[in-house]
Length: 358
Image (cartoon, rainbow, N blue to C red; front, side, top):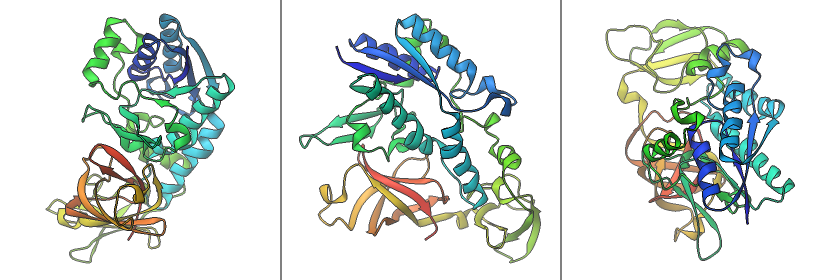
């Protein structure tokens, strides 16, 4: 019997993943990571994957399913690898994706470490994505079959050491099917709401979170159409490219177009100014090396996704050193430095990098 270590957050997805793997005949070892300090939250128990309450639910689920379960305290490493870079990115006028940082530095490496220490062949999570193995033996990452829940975007930079041993039992399911399984088993997570994007931030209010911990100063808000200063911002960390909230009323819709940390200035303009054909990405990481799918590894066609909630769109990609210039067929909405650009070939993830200024 093969053994698999399942990351159990206490949520419906990881709970059902553990059930399905046991049903398939695996020995399941459930692991929950304690990631964030309770006393720093005003509503800590509502956090979907960081809270003591969710970890208690994971333990109850493990007991109900008859699987082993252990809690591991990773708060210090989570602070160093996720929270501090998250804050630093906002101080630099970027819009970070902490889920990708957590996947790269916390969740998957520590699942693998636990698996090695306990003689388990595989690791697993409740992500909606799929792993396949081609004739070459190389593991490939593919989109989940539920287009509304596909989470392959957040997994684009996992290496072969992880992908070769990763099981994603929900990749072929629709979210409604997962819920039905949870309800049929009376799992504690069956009625738990969907996870918020930033699990350690109360109510998704990242601005208030960064306010408490980051250095920030007020500065000018400049209308790019007129060149006039039309207001003052309380700190650039409260804004991201494409945002409409917290902007002065100018009698017409305006959006954040640029954040200038050198001038500590926020530049706003009409919607068309936040649309662009081209974005650039650095720190590229490949699941499928370009030479394996493109006749010219420096120039190729692909689809690219620049936000987790947006679809991937057709584009031409030019590779230079560790960076890529992505030119879309149609203008795209507000690529934000700090987010990731992920490249696809149909449903196969090729790789990606972090969006930066061109």
